[in-house]
Image (cartoon, rainbow, N blue to C red; front, side):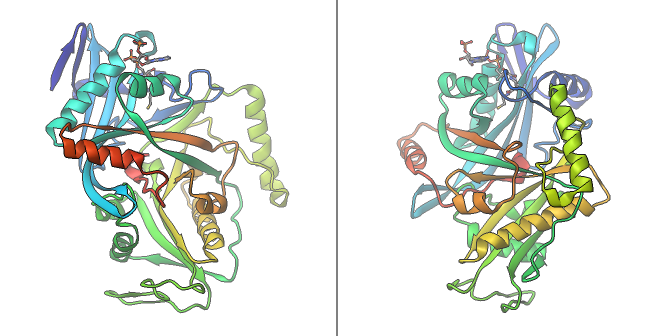
Length: 402
Ligand SMILES: CC(C)(COP(=O)(O)OP(=O)(O)OC[C@H]1O[C@@H](n2cnc3c(N)ncnc32)[C@H](O)[C@@H]1OP(=O)(O)O)[C@@H](O)C(=O)NCCC(=O)NCCS
């Protein structure tokens, strides 16, 4: 693919000639609101395409002006469940847009728009129904580009919850049992429980089998019956959870093995507070001071996905699972995992309430925007129904799209 728009040339990424230039561009582009005190940078550790290469179909495009690499964008395609009305689910092909970066000195020249439009063209050749992207609500440039200029509409608002990894393990209540699933067990369970959840990926098995997926765990009250045979799952009535049956599950994805993040631009006072908070937490963990981990050097993180809980006692069980994941990060030999991240719907109060997170580090409003790429009447109708449906009961955030 090679598109020319005046002086801008857009073509597919070529690892041989573009790798170091894309990495250099990434280093010069912080993501997020321009006026933000904290700037977030991504380090792809020598493989700029790593963030999409776990998806079934993907593409990276670069923009050049006078042989200088001035912009980059990535896209991936998969099949997901879309919920067009409370009782109506269907499969749709969706194209995710991420990693849009334009060199700071070449902004407002139409490069960002041209990159998105070229990626949309590729999506259309692959028969994609909807293109979507996520951006911080405060990222004015990104919001205006996608919504005002390119016809995307706001679809869902999610919250990114961030929990710092502390020095000490957090005790898990003795009345909670935590068990790890085999991959096949997790797949059966996810398809059964979350198959009709909005944006549930059809290739959930590929996600669970990926080496970045560290596992799937379930928590339930100790002493309640639980049994598992290789071919059948019996767990206090998954077919009909009653009032006495509570449980929670989640899976963990190790993003740090793929890319690192770094916070730049923090004032000295913030660096001093962060260091002191870690010191106090190490010496006096019982004080429970709000800890700011060392995010000012490249750091890795775990992403919790596929979070699901049922029953009256499920909230505290979810908290226990999150503590379990935190402890995994604390005790691992690789000390680069500094935070545990997850993303939940702003409407999902049970999950938000029971997932431990730092208000300081979390981002409450991540806007998900969507655009229909097909123009026939049926597709227009589906799109209208999809965007009209408010607050689904749950939303599946794919760890490959973090
Ligand atoms: C967001 C970004 C890619 C825009 O790239 P760009 O090449 O400057 O965008 P365009 O020139 O195509 O701008 C298209 C429209 O977007 C809007 N826009 C772009 N930058 C804007 C800004 N700083 N403030 C307000 N609106 C802006 C305008 O409506 C603009 O149209 P106009 O110039 O005719 O008014 C660029 O600012 C960037 O790389 N930011 C840092 C990385 C980032 O945040 N990426 C988005 C992650 S989702």
